[in-house]
Length: 283
Image (cartoon, rainbow, N blue to C red):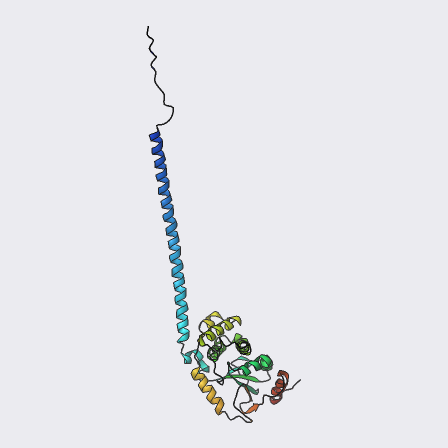
């Protein structure tokens, strides 16, 4: 007798492998699509940021170039205003540009690129200013040309402009300009003070250090004073000054008429000479 096996239905134990592979492929494709979308979003954001930075930098550079060109092309008459014809900067107890008619006047003829002028200002410039601030005299600061190094042009230009537009910071700026020149000349460093562009940049640095407003610093030109200095220097040479010996700077004059000799072995002695000549008490 033959025994036949019982027939029954077989139950699948796992999903067909084809279905599993298909599902895995679909998941990979979906993930790849999501990754591509994410990359595109990131690239788009980065591109927008880069374009924005480029645009901002371009605007900044353009503004800087425009300001620099405006400074270079500045009109002397408009820029210098009341100083355009060679006038001195007046300093008194009333402030910059203000003269007390009841007081005598002490005029200092100097050149921003004259080392002797710079040394004198470093030694006793603040003392002379303090005398003006105490109401003892009006102080006239008169730029002229005697040495004529490159530094003179941007320094004189800036000094006159700051006196007009930011007078609160002018006197410290004036001293700082001369102090910088003295430091360079006395150490034998001529790289900056003999180069117009480098001097121009340094003058703007000095202005910022002394608190001159950014607006004024931005408009400081390399040179708007050629005609100014021609006029002031000629007027200085032609001035009928009593007791004048050799023409040179610095020169101190009382009431536009009498030279005060540079005498004394040190700053204190020379300050006493100036004060005595102005009819003031000396220590």
